[in-house]
Image: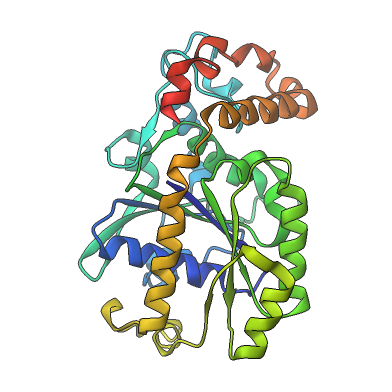
Length: 326
């Protein structure tokens, strides 16, 4: 299952995504965690110190390796250099699976131990000195989108992505790659404005969007969120001494997380698992093709010097094998 956490900056989406990752791992579920935010905080939220987080390999810096592996023997892609972030898989392409070992995970993922449980953590990487003033952050998140386009996952397997803040997720087609998107919103006008914008942008793409109310302190906050987001409000989370200790670098055992917050995380998992039967493989692949053609026409053809529309393999993308794969 593919899960995105989005929300305005400072809403607590990284904290909530890290708690959800811990909750899944504590049950023994296989988890791949991805930090796709421009501010790279997921590693520390999972308990890494600054040196460990800084040493994580950046997906953006290993894009040639990722492309070469995923290209496989696909005859429609002449070279890895002709692949862009939206390139769809075709006959001969290699696919990624949550539980397997592969060269992409070897190069880009690191195991993170959480109270005896282990998750794989991947990060896009921060801006470097060479990027400042000349590079767009989406050149880094493109590696995540490419991996998601080539990822096969099933029930009980989880890929949790901490996304960029606000509506910046819509700068690419990555927002359509998830089974469910959790929008973390504070009970403020600014908090729910991001929700309205996200819902408006996503309305024509079949995005399953649920709101997680964060920093909710009482009935007035709850009533405000219910009035503003209606049935999209899934659950609320309040103050947590456990989280406060984590933010000070002294997290207790996860088993000591407050009961109310533990139940909230279980609601997230239940909602996630319920989306598996809603998967629409044909829509998923149509959207993949849609955004690939848009990117090809806008910049990809010129940048690569290739006709990127020719990368689309109708037999794979539109066939029953592809529907089964997603």
